[in-house]
Image (cartoon, rainbow, N blue to C red; front, top):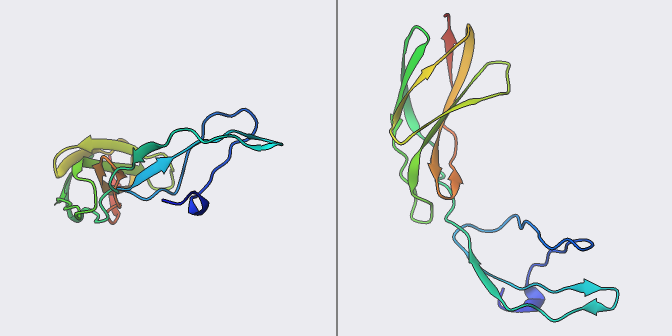
Length: 150
């Protein structure tokens, strides 16, 4: 904010000299100042530092996911994600898969709109795809469920 009175404030406790700021808007320029404080009040502010956040990740999920299973191998393909003007460019994709009933996901990263997943154990696997950008991971695709018999 331009006026200090209207600015958001975050405090640390004790002699802590760092803080992680959360809830910042993507693609936004921030001006930051630091002040020390104690029981007598606040000290003078530091010089202002400018920091810009990256554009947000793509809001669109990979769509039209197609898959073909050959034994324990699943070949996947999907439509490319096209980011909006205020979103980060797509650098690649993450394919996340896990066995149903388990929380540990395995990840395959690719720059293509396709991937081959090896399903190592018998069971049903949940697979989803996300775009990856400088601003973070995008919205996940709808999940597909694939049985594995070998």
